[in-house]
Length: 182
Image (cartoon, rainbow, N blue to C red; front, side, top):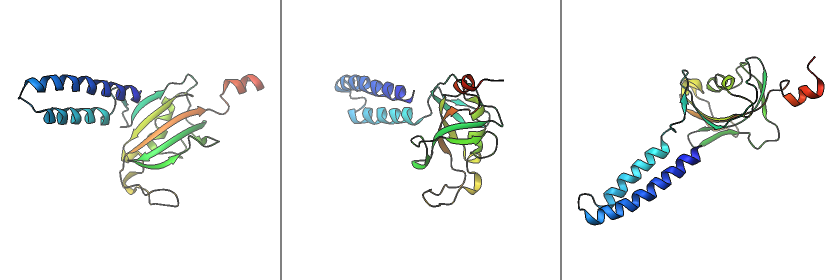
């Protein structure tokens, strides 16, 4: 979905350039450089701003649906299998999208950031969302010290967390069909 916003921005920029080239050649009201600078700052704001289709939850977490799944929703207390990548600004904190096994955790056990734990029950198996987690729902006022292979995270730093629900062990239809649900 983010690609569509970028494609739109590039098309808008190209058509704007055509208009500016024609307009500035006939008018002294704005120089070509001024017009390009204005257009550049507008395009940057468009690309940096959260997408219009992002939703903000009451907790303060903002999410964008990247891929929509059609599986069941997890419930608190259930074992859940996820894949994720986490970033603090441009620093990668963790990335398990390419590992052989997903990350397994019991939903609601506190094994994940508060902002992620509160959002997972809204997702379905197969969903992939990009979360913008405010600092107080991430590592909080203490942040996280650097450790082997893990960067330091400053206090109250917002975290970008891309997460995909890949399974609910014990709830997958194929497994239930194979062993029965008695």
